Amino acid sequence: MTTTETSWVPLFRLATVTAVAVVCLIPLQAMVFLLSPPPQTVAGYFDLFQRNPFLGLVDLDLLLMVDYLAMIPLYLALYVLVRRRSGTLGLLGLVLGLFSLMLFLVSREATFSMWMLSSQHAAASTDAQRAALEASGQMLLTMYNGGTFGLSYVLGALSTMLFSVALWRYEILGKAVGIVGVVTAVTMLVPPNVGPVGLVVAMLSLIPTAIWLILLARRLARVPA
Image (cartoon, rainbow, N blue to C red; front, side, top):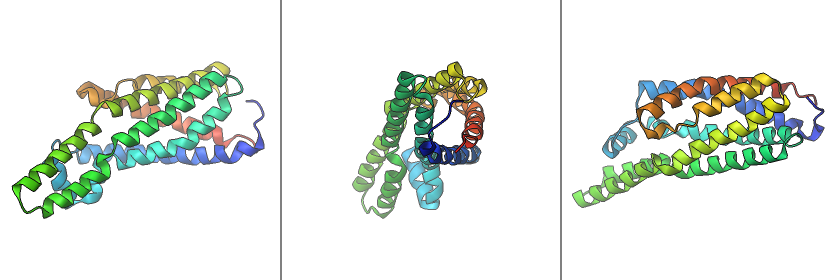
């Protein structure tokens, strides 16, 4: 790999830490999903938040929000590494990755708002009030499972693809990182909200994703200061 500016080394170290953190969160998220599948109705979420608010937040992707935010240093580090060999792929990868993050956070409005609606629903004194709150909850779930999230997921896959193609083509961190990244991106092209097939593919994509992040973390940690 070419000599890297010393000023970027702290970013690479931060990206290493955040990549490892995301890898650690992946099995935790999968375990929660399998042991406590998310409710399918607004009433189910309201009841869950009254019983266990933290589990309600996790079932509405609290940990995944942390994952996405933790990816910011990694996107920046990948851009810095790729830009000298392929500024176009690096810039497109960065823009798509950050735009994916923004869309995902917008689509997760339900994560905390559903908790608030649940408390209001429990305190409501009339059927009309409860019906209005349930309608608001349904709107949040529609956004949660809607096109914004699907677009965010696909843009994240394209960002991973662009960075990985550049890493592979120019052997910036070794070919293995790029190859595994391309495989990861391919498995991410099917959003989990398109049906049972999408959900299965999304779960399977966690395996190459974890491997890719581990490889990235190992190589970024070895960038000389």
